[in-house]
Length: 581
Image (cartoon, rainbow, N blue to C red; front, side, top):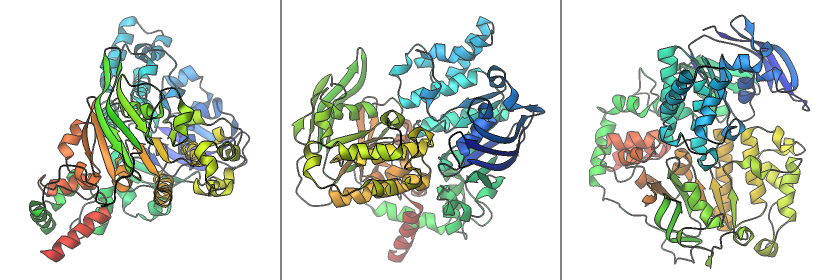
């Protein structure tokens, strides 16, 4: 398979004066697995589109330079020709799914190549197996969760057997275990069959163990280009751009006496270096002295106000398929509740019932002390706002400013009775889109559109926010800025958050409570440092604890009732324990 060559490429989208790519020079040898990282808007997705041949052939703009696959210029190929050599998976699976059912979607590409039926069937079966979607073969696309749709999009691309795969955040909607399964498949295709993989991702911690090379972009230029471990020898470029650094890398830089000759990328590698150190003995002894904790505790000591949300014996079924069973759950004022679980576990269904988007099969739901009435969305919307997983569907005006202004101008009920603390200018500042106030929302990057949707919800000044994957598609810097703002707003205005997420880092840092759904039921309800101590059980539920929590648990022999959720907390725990022993 030939190399990919990017020769002095620059690109500016039609209608924009700002170049997205600036004289990019890059060679990706055949059979290499490359991670393309960087903050939102840095040009990662645009470079991915150029590598796949969609720029300049299908996307309007000013293009300079050349992109070659071997000796052939990709931009001159017809789409059907390029698709046989280079496959692309987009951030949003809805943008590339065109059929009603899973089987037809995966077979579509091979059928258009006029392959024999037996070969089409072989490719469908193989692609379903690679993505663990065999059981969904006959299902209709609209019945799938966001993560399941993403798996179908990946399977359809694999079925084309393009030897170059360009994937733009293919795991953004996948649960942590599903993410590792997909990365394992890509690794297999790369190592066993020599496929070239170019992966755009914000999930740096999860991805780096699998890749050969890391490219870091900033403002349309490549600023770091190195083998995986070498890319993190100097953390300054990553910190300046507020792009995630693997937790084990951060730990190694903080404990150079332990990690003298290695830079670990995984909890397993860090454990191997620390298992025989004095630190391990200190943590184990401390864990053995700690009392067991088995339930969620509210340590505030304050009287309970009326529940913000309450599910009583709630069940949900679609025909013979049970989605939720016997859900008894309360959300207290100022809770930051994270709802986690594998794709298809019922997380979004649980939240949609609270808004009245659908009716439960059994049980009752209460919001603000009132029964939730299915179908009366405006009634529930006086107290709650819902950020959809597909945030693009919430945007409908011609500019960023108009999106924010709409919510401020069309307040009702409770919102009209309270003085609003934010102007359009303040909201633009919060979501970091001041320079784009006149921009059409659909000219923004995926992460920027997500931030705009959140800003539009905040303009309505709700009492509770239901956030369905709020950080999907955002780099760590922008995600952290939003979550920190939400934290501040929650404290100052006594707001409540219900966050559906696969981002365990966000849960660890911001949630005071997490609920784990598995097999239609709640299997954990507790403080994150308690729940994440159960690393083996969680893995069986599709959840991987943050690497630092995994390391802490292993060093304690699985006996810790609480684990550290950040590198800083882990280091502080070591210092504190040593001081008291």
